[in-house]
Amino acid sequence: MARQLTGRISFRYAFVFAGKRSIAHYALAGGEFVLDFSDRLATAIRQCANPVVVGLDPRFEQLPAPLQAGIAAGDMEQRAMAYRRFCCDIIDVVASLVPAVKPQVAFFEQLGPPGMSALADVARHARSRKLLVILDGKRNDIGSTAEAYADGFLGEQSVWGGDALTVSPYLGDDSLTPFVDVARARAAGLFVLVKTSNPGGGQFQDLVADDKPIYRHVAEHVERLASQSAGTCGYGAVGAVVGATYPAQLGELRAVMPHTWFLVPGFGSQGGQAADVAPAFDAHGLGAIINNSRGIIFAHARKEYAQQFGAARWQGAVEAATRDMISQLQTHTSVGKLRAV
Image (cartoon, rainbow, N blue to C red):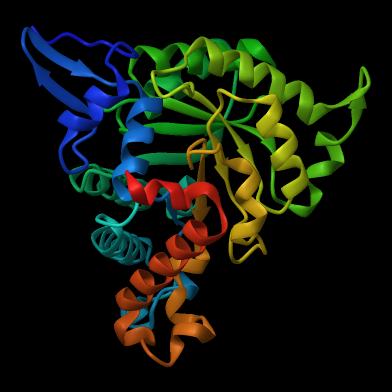
């Protein structure tokens, strides 16, 4: 019978035996071993020499014109088919370049059952291409409801097969515990909202309680959870969402959260640049993954790529934008040190 161990295999050993980004399972003498999420993520980043996460946020009106053609308004089945094709084509373009993709669940839910069927297919296709799948659902609840969310979204054996899930902490520790328990049991991960990139995020997150902003209280709790689940790479299964639009807080929180992976949104279309996210990384180029959604998946409409590629060659624009982002991070952050691995 297969055996599962998490956090028990040395990082060097896992990296050597992983092969070309086959990072989930390792057949060793006596059984099958499954690396925990943090070590799988570290391995994938090292293999790609970059921490780019491509956000899959399909918006029908922004799809390349060939994918919109002939689809009537209100035809959710056809829109879901367009989303499926669009996202799977993006996955095929970036699979050899980046460690992970992040489907935004809301855009699929918006289409009802056909959209959720498309999400399942997209997640399945990403896993088949050896990409980690971070489901961006920002779920949270208490008791059995939280357990149901965790059971449905987390782990290869779950319905949605997510390697990780974004969650909100604002119902308190008892709302996070079911997610943490399932994540650790299934070698999956979590990313908890700590300091978000939206302009209104500070309305509550920056309020001061006991001489510290709320986001610091959340950060310290997440760090405790991360340190308790740390893999051999030094980072835990519980990570933090910290926006690229707040560089000062990135540096502050990196110091407060030395065992915590950061999922950093806000790069590109929201204004974050490579230099802004530099404080999120440790000295070796690990510790953070940087999400870019619109700036990559709709790159065909950006002035830098429109003339060369346009809607007819939109996949080429996706590849070019991804490579440009990788280059920027390697040039302006400690991610450049990963190229020597």
